[in-house]
Image (cartoon, rainbow, N blue to C red; front, side):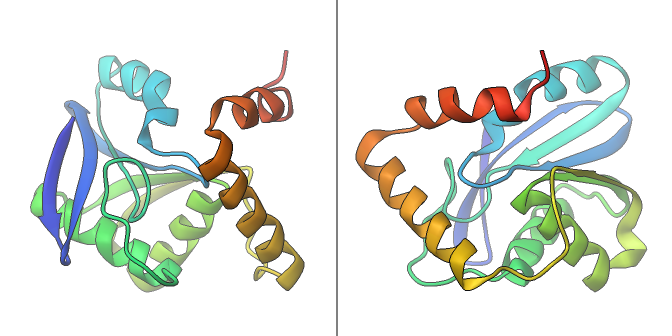
Length: 158
């Protein structure tokens, strides 16, 4: 586990393995720890795997107010610049996939390949924002365990 100060915040991240870089962006409401099995597998399989905590998640700084997809992209790009990584394969789950698509829109020359998992390109609706806000409030009250147990069967096949 590593941490670095970039763009006025502290960013927690994993950087394991060697070879071609694979960058993995977590979904909401998770953090980089969701990628642990992939980090271990691909790190042993000849990839350099980088998995940051997005701004406001895990070990990265929480900043009041709204954070745009572009801000997540700029934070990720700054981390990769710090690590000396110019081109890479970029993957994301759910909200992470939306960040990946925004990264490709803003900085396509840095992308060697994309991995999009359980994500969508459509803009968020007001109802979707309400559900996500309510979920965030619930997780602050109750923690992650109950939520993780509820969604696991929806996210992983038997």
